[in-house]
Length: 153
Image (cartoon, rainbow, N blue to C red; front, top):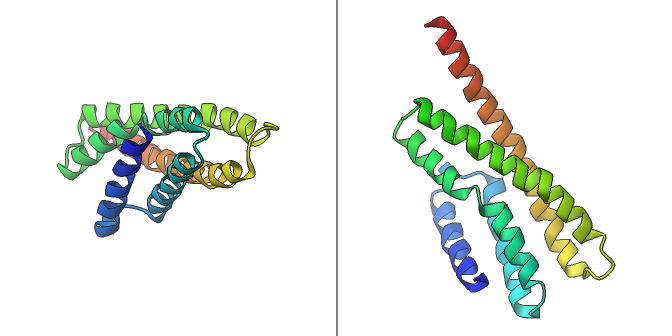
């Protein structure tokens, strides 16, 4: 699973680097640190189960993110887009900030956690916080814009 994940992140990193206008610097940093983390786990042959759990939790919202991108590119802004965006934001915030904070805290301060894993975990968590801030801002803007438009109609 981790080798497939590494391949995906290598591919996607090369794609977003070539199409940087549709990606933020935080997205590129997220991909670089994820590649580093998965590579370390594969190299030291430890932490595979934890890495799979983290990848599941952090990437579970990705299909909705991609669907949201396609809908935005197609200039679709109907009710379905609003639902996709709201569900994406809710899953992202819950998985990365609520559960993610709990597990990051316990992982970082567990006596058996190696320093190398702490060094890799911290920036990935911090990038998740940056993403969450951006998502709340964008989603909030779209909600306000939708509500104002509906009130004026």
